[in-house]
Image (cartoon, rainbow, N blue to C red; front, top):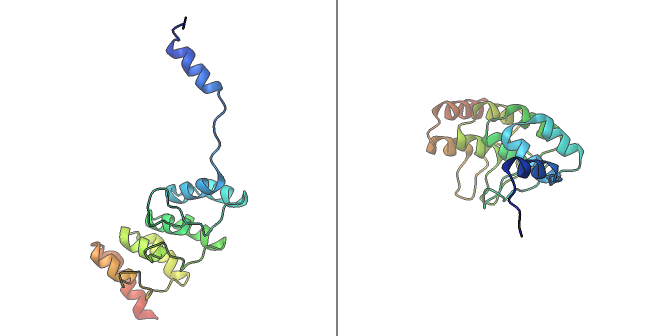
Length: 153
């Protein structure tokens, strides 16, 4: 005979069960997505690979730097670059971090990438540069910033 269990007892049992720890690589990707710089540094310190390709949420993949750029987390972009993230690494469609910043209109992240030497002329697999990506996605402020940076080179 099975005894009914109360909701309170079920909650206590669930809380007592050991939580499954997130692997360090997933922790790095998630920290890059959210901009959690403390978790990002912790994951890197625990052995997460700074140039790993995350295909959990995008079949084309995104690297930690791409995630941070896409979500406009400039501080995370700086940390990832300081920790060795390759600035020109691409996903499966040839998007660099600067392409992802351009796609989302992530101005602050794009400014960090530009200041750190991101190649403004890199094309993705569709043959589009970051400025063309920003233009196509309707981000005029970012288009202007990318054009200004290109003119200064």
